[in-house]
Image 1: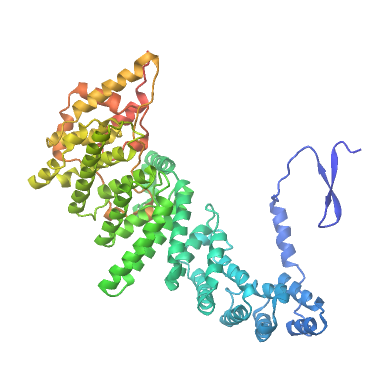
Image 2: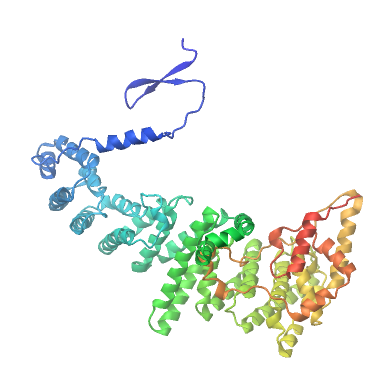
Length: 621
């Protein structure tokens, strides 16, 4: 009887090993100490290397198997290939013999062929690369049962062995190694059309884990594949959106902002010493080249690679007609991937900017994208959540896109207001209820109207003609309807919209806001219980882009909020009583998150609402 030890049988070595029972779990990872690492290195250096069997080489092994069904020589040769690293001259001899035997290497020689295909070849001389490529093409044409294995081996070479190699895309040595792989893949696709499915399966199954540095290199190779085989475009674009969305949701906005703000605080605390020790140019380079959040850093470089691909693709076509036609076809692929991947996901922050950036390259593209979103909004057969998300993308795109002409904004404002008026008239006949759940799409469209008018108020009030257009939208009828859309809008949106409409006498919303606040006050204090308010759950998908390197592509086509002069004057003329009521109720701290306070509010209001959220207690007595 052994009270402190147990005996465990090791089937691989046919021996017993002793393990203490003090710890119930053992790690499968070996903990290497520095001395153990040195021993491992020395073991590799001192390992015995057998010379290639010359009398009993590949030709002899295959001959023995064919004539006498003796596979011992073949097994010995496979073991030699697996355990040894061939010199270039040995490599050439082996593959010269293998090339002459391609037709004979039927499926019964699978171990031998797989051992040959698994040899390292892309970092060798030009002669070796040529010999491997010729054998690979010939064996796959002769016997397609090796196709899946060969393709997986080629795709796996996209993933660098060294941990830090995957983070750099500009290394000439890496580019040359990858170039020969892509050349061989292109030859295989040209010679064997059925390789298409095998490559798709290999690409998806070998995609690296999102926390690995090889993620970037893999995306770079996918985009490289599209350059010479555009037939993969639809599949790879959707796959890229899925993988970038994984990065996006694992790098939340608040985590990125917290890490960047911590970095800024450290620099401000030691700013004088920093400026003396580090030159200004190096400091600027440090600020703009890396993200403190590791996953955001991977996402940043990956997004830049895709932006470069989109730019290159848009500018590569020849004539104007071909360019527009091809761009529209590619946009349809983007929209299809967007609808399948991005639209159903709530609160992604950066990946949707791929469509934003591509639409900026040509004016027509943005119109097609907006029309696609509006068709979903007005389609009653679409799920309500998809329609609501489409409204959010539509409103945020119109507000943030600097390349959108003002006439397009007016067009969609008119469309949305007309749709809302028809909705109100139809509900009056059917006497439907006004709950948020039953009218989710209607309330979302109303908030989109308020948001766009508040955000683009400078452009929409630039002259008398523009103001007359706003007056024609019948905003008063909308805000005073029985649905009372201001009741469920985000407080930041309602406050900013009320300021614009009051400044230009489009509608008088402050009285409605105060009445809504009083009603909620009575509801909250009834029977000493606090009931949750009905606030529209939405987000603005094109909120400020936080990634530093790829963000340089967005900054020139992206609008930051600027309040109009009349709106600022009006907001300062509000009475303290109305401000207190608005801050207390419409800016209810329990109902607002930081991301709900959109950056289109003036800094004073934004800080006031954030401060109210932090400091103001809720009295239920």
